[in-house]
Image 1 (cartoon, rainbow, N blue to C red):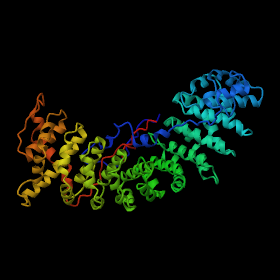
Image 2: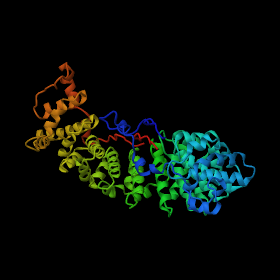
Image 3: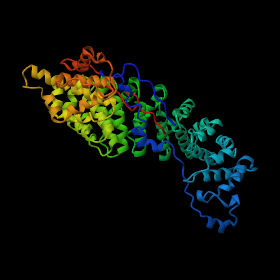
Image 4: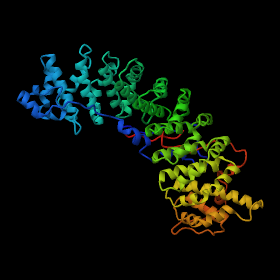
Length: 560
């Protein structure tokens, strides 16, 4: 199955105050793509046979005779105990009729919905013979039956797929993509999709055997049957996905074809093309740029308003990947109208889409001052704060990052805007969470707002530190005091610095706490008080950000 994690490219956006921001999604093992698209990683080709065992008995008499069963027999009606005889027909058949009949019946028993006998077929020794039958371009029907049987084996376990690879199935499936027979092309695409869906090793082998150019040929062939188009688009998406990602040079050739498929009349083709693009965009800035240069951004932004949830999901993942690129790449999605539609996604019925929308906003908030201004003008932050107030932990985390990046990368007017949106109670509520990273950025964000409140008080703008009063009013001081009991030194230092600086709370070490007070002396407190929030001053143009799950941020492994 897909697994592993690529290294974060040098120069990617990072939140200035959190060194390990790029690692925060590596701990999550399930991505949106698993949930929305993962069920399509492998599939078994079914069979429409419908003749029952009673009908067979009436027609031919003997249910133990292999010739009792044929093309019209329902798969469930073919006895598995006859499998050795089916295999013998393929391996030792004296006529092409016998070989074909054996391949047909093996395909039948592998097409059942429940517990197909993959292992039994492999142990019978028939797999290399079926693989060789795919070379029979003079007999497309025999090719098709053999390929169908092997495709369904590839839908099984990784060990099952390895058995096919061992006997040379991949290059033969690739050859089928160039067949004059449309059923063989369709079956070849289906098989490559199943093999690539097994994991990175199999995906890379398929790429090495030039499966992608062959699939692109299928996708651009005039008058291609819809089933073949669907399977080819799906197979391309499997070739583009996984961690570590395939080299850009090996998959970028698909972008011109995929960009055209985004306008195909068939919904399933469009969905798989959109997913493939999202996978290609996931990684370093050159991957993002390749997708931007393909001209797909306007269409992806359009999909954000689609009633088709898989299209929305792949689109928000793609624009999220682009937002985690450089400032020019981020500006591209803003120019295409992203901010006019992303607010609707923050209240979407699907939690994964809400989470991805918050993540996208957080990376835009880590951009330039005009980009932060654009977020404010789009009025998304009241909805972000609603997400922060909600009960879903993953969404709360993304919302916190959205606020934190404005505090870190914005200017005074931006912080005042967030205060007007009543952000303080929501941040104080986040202090009740139990994740060190989230508590750290929440405290740092509150420190930034407290610093602004203190500046206003000292400048005579207000009679007291209004932020401090807001924190007191919502019980935030108690939450900050509790954080002093945490064993994390940085958290303790942050909490202590806030309490001593803004609330006149005397230092109190936690029970069984730190032995040497010198560890948290003046130098350490000053360090805590002078964190990155001094970067919020006018004229700051820092563009660092945290980066995620998925996928520039580290994307999640795709366990398919």
